[in-house]
Image (cartoon, rainbow, N blue to C red; front, side, top):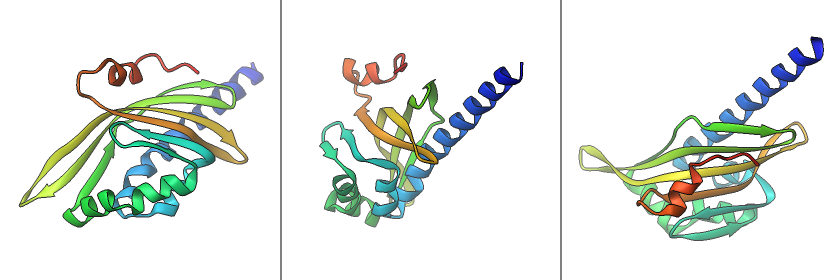
Length: 154
């Protein structure tokens, strides 16, 4: 009984840590904290952004935030909003899936400029969790984008 309770507690703590990690992405991206965004990822992680290619490693992931496309978005005013993820745990590995919406300030209002499906692969590293791969695809009706929202068991 004690072992079962300990397993359940660890799973709850892992899910909360993963939710927290994913929730931190938006505010870090919105304030242009490239180092903070990169620190969410493992050293050799991959971030695949549909329509924009793949970034391999923390340095390349940081470069996405420091790059001209993202800086122009920030100059207009932007908000990266991620939904609460569905998380599948498998020991020291996990997979999460959620939606993300990027809003840009236009005049006195806000316009959704990117609505995407996201699949996050994560691994326990040291004292916490890190992203090993994130796939982000526009929800444009494609099978590839819809597949990211399917069963995510690692």
